Length: 115
Image 1 (cartoon, rainbow, N blue to C red):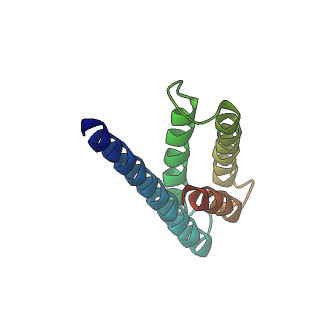
Image 2 (image 1 turned 135 degrees about the horizontal axis):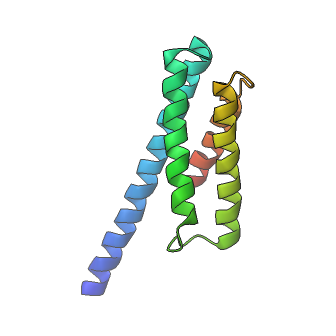
């Protein structure tokens, strides 16, 4: 009886975590879409880049944590993608790239993978 209740809680917690992650990627892409309209260097773009940077830093940190349950090869691949995203954000800030769309595409792929 107790085991069943605990399993339900763990399952619900996992579902809630996926919902939060999905919402974070959706917000990241909403901000990136607004940044594409407003243009690089605008306050809107700065906010979008900051949000995406924070999101990806959290993801990379979580993926690198030894307690992360994902397979090691998947974790390594996602960390590599995260590093690319963080570098692309910096290139956009420096005016060396206009890769808002590329970051949004990566976010969308990951968001879709959560569902």
